[in-house]
Image (cartoon, rainbow, N blue to C red):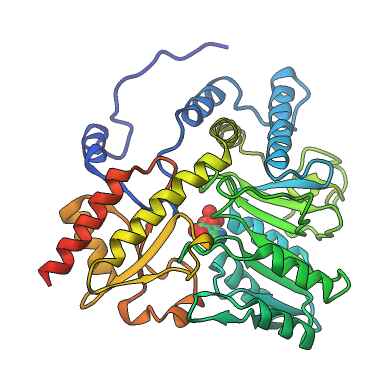
Length: 413
Ligand code: PLP
C-alpha cells in the first residue's frame, strides 16, 4: 500500500484554520458538559494513526489488518469494564452515541402497559423523549422520583415511600445532572428499587456526565445498564459511546443489520454482536482507547479532585456577586463540574452572548435538553440557566476570569 504525499494546503477545509487557531488562543472554553474540549493529545494521535494505518472494517474480514482492528475493539471492551470494576460481571455494548444507547435500551426492553417507569427530575431528553416515544406506543405509567426542592436534591425518604406504594418496574436515573452538577444517589436508589421489588425492577443509569469523573464499582452496585458517552467525561471523540449491560438484562434487538457474522440468518445474533449492527467506528474507538489510557494514568481520583476544587472556587466567587442566583445542590459533597446560574434583569442567553462577545468565554445557556428540572429550580423565567462546565483541562485563572466577567456584567446593570 502506498502512503500519500503530505498535503499542507488547507483549502479543502470549510473554515479558516489560521483564523480559528488565533481565536482559540483567546477563548476560554467552559462548555465541557456539551463535550470535553480539549482532548488529551494521545487521543488525536491514536485517531490519526489508526485512520492512516488501520481504518479497515473490523469484524468483516479474516485478513491480518481486520483482525488487529477486532483485537483493538476487544481491548477497549476490557478497558471500559476495568474502569467500572465490572470484569466478568457485565458486557459492553458499543453505540455511536449515548442517545443511540438509550434508544437501543428503551426500544429493546419491550415495555408494556402494566409497567411503571420512574425517572429522576434531572433526566436528559436522550431518556425522556425516547421514553415518551415508547409510552405513546405501549402506554406504560411514568412517575417522577420525589425531589427536595429546597435542597435541589432527590428525597430518598419519599422515594422509599413511593416505591412501597407504587413499586417500579424500571428506574431511569442520571448519575450527574447536566444542568446542576448534582451527583445523584444512584446507588441508594438502586438498593431501594431492588429491595422493594425482590430484585425485579431494572435500574438504568445515565453516566454520560460521570463516567471517568466518578469512580464506580460495579462489583458493589450492579446496575442493569450504565450508559456512557465517549466524548464527554471520558475525553474521547464523538461517534463512540455505549452501555455496560448487566448479564441478566435481556434486550431485544432494536436496531438490525449486518454484524459480520451468521450472515445467512435473517434474525439478529443473540449475543452482544446482535446489539452492534453496522460497521464499527474503529477510528473513534482508537481515540476512546487512548482517552481511557489517559484517565488511568492521571487517575479518576485526581481528575475528580481537580474539578471539585475548581467547582468550589467557582461557587464561592459567584455566590458573592449580587443578583446572581445559583442552581446547585445544597450539599457541596454532591456537586461536581457544572455550575448553573442566572442573573437578575438578564435572560440567560443574553448573559451567554455577553460572555462570548465581550469576554471570549464559551458557556451554554438555556434548558440543556433536560425538560423536567427547570420547573423545580424555577429557571424558566430567565429562559433557562447559564451553565459553566469544567474539565480536567480547566484552570484556576479561567474560573477567575469568568467570575470577574460576571461581576462586571452585574455592575453594568
Ligand atoms: N445524557 C446526558 C446527561 C447528557 O448530558 C447528554 C448530552 O448532553 C446525553 C445523555 C446525550 O449524549 P449524546 O448527545 O452524546 O448522545
